[in-house]
Image (cartoon, rainbow, N blue to C red):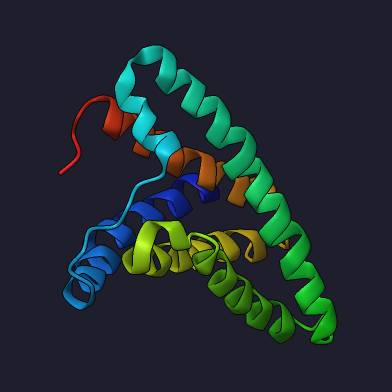
Length: 153
């Protein structure tokens, strides 16, 4: 749990303070936000529905797919060494970024960064999916809360 909280802080702070400002210097158009997260502004019922969706499909579903399956298969193809897992993590993070193409170029860069943090949260504790699932869920929960509270820019 502690690793997930630290990883979520790294993900959110790195995104807000480093990745987004850099991305906006390169691509001036703003990053598009997921409809599910945006819907959190529509009231507490929609915010709770959004939480259910992000914990089920993003936190659990994406982590199971990207870190649990794709990263492991890529590491298998690269020889299953420690180095193979880290190279696979970088490749899958790029794929994760492009999987969020609907967010625009800034969103692809931000999602790639998120993939790197989530991949590290998977590899550091010995390829355990609990940490990236919790990290992803915590980060998305905070995003929904920020939108619900109207604290967005």
